Length: 277
Image 1 (cartoon, helix red, strand yellow):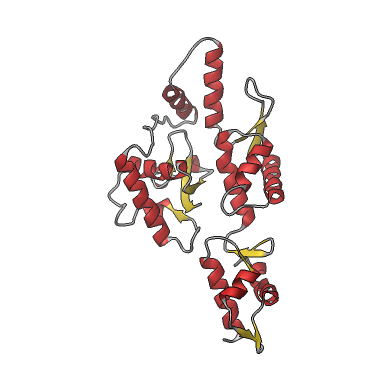
Image 2 (cartoon, helix red, strand yellow):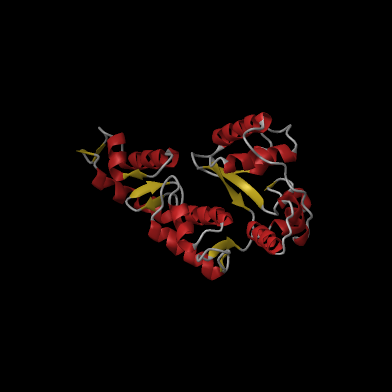
């Protein structure tokens, strides 16, 4: 195999991998391959892949390589975890601990950048706690729901979460009925969620790559589903920690027909694509 052929084979192996690969792993995978008459070794990998990393075709994960940008993945995980209203440290820990793990320093850097740009914001601690809570300012509805419920409770008033969610939907300019509970105890939804996951895995460009919901809705095994059922199945996969959903930050600004292709959770959040954890 000539050197250009070796490099392309290495790139393909990395793009198909489900987690970052080290130079040593790549060298072992291509044992017996020779470069300039010498056995391919780990020391040969970095020089061969330097151009692909510089061009953004591959991404460096420390001394490893993968097809996903670690900073982009850190951003996605931080925004997804922000709905839990954790403190700065807890948020970074949660985002770093996914599979594959992210370097804590990188996650802290991305978190601080999101705070500076205003996408994340620190809010006062909840009653009985000393830790400030970090929220996603584009999707503050879980925080607002908890604050409204706490305020009402301070006056001895209790209201169902569904009423508060409906109120928040109206506050966004789009009244949204509270979604029915999404749980694996609903056999039909659980089966559909499995079907959706299998379709996503089948058509993804590479393992871990995002697939748009617009494309997924056209797949033969999903095309007949009504929007509510499809959306609940996607949300169930996220609740079961099998996938991440990528939020659409400007859903209110797009045409209604386009918005119908997104997944919504009934809190005013819209998601444009999905990828396996």
